[in-house]
Amino acid sequence: MDNNHSEKDLVARARHCPEAFGLLYDQNYAAILNYCLRRTGDVELAQDLTAETFVKALKNIGRYEWRGSSFSAWLYRIAGNELTSYFRKGLHKAVSLEHLRESQGFEPSSPEELEDELIAAQEQLARQQEFLSCRQKISQLPPKYQEVIALRFFAGKSHQEIAEILAKPEGTVKSLLHRGLKKLRSFF
Image (spheres, rainbow, N blue to C red):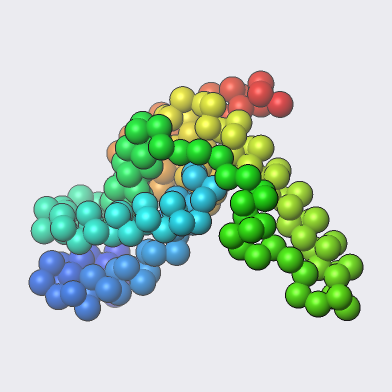
């Protein structure tokens, strides 16, 4: 039995069986969380948006129709709508590194490991700063470009998968991605 057929059967069972929806949740949670995290840069917010995505999916699973696109594509659409709604409300704000230090306990665990932890922390901070800088630049793009870039580079989706998620022709996705990357390059 191929994956699409088994996923289709699992979705059909999930309409009446919470355990089946639990399996769909387990299969898709990490990918949806990662997508939300890459779009927001905030773990708690990403977890909230992911939870809301699955709540909406559970509430509406009876209306989900199998039209050749995967269940995960439907989840990405819901997550994308949740992200758009959140950003439209203007509730997002930057978090300072000092806040992360205070709230996350960003301190070396012992004096012996101080140098190794400091080097590791500096490398992690550099990666985080690079990511935040890139995310900030991406957030300046129109939402249609943000979405295709996030799906392509943060979620690792193919052009075909993005087309399925966004319900757009693959050529349109390629065009949006090309134009979005061109605009993004102009920011650097």
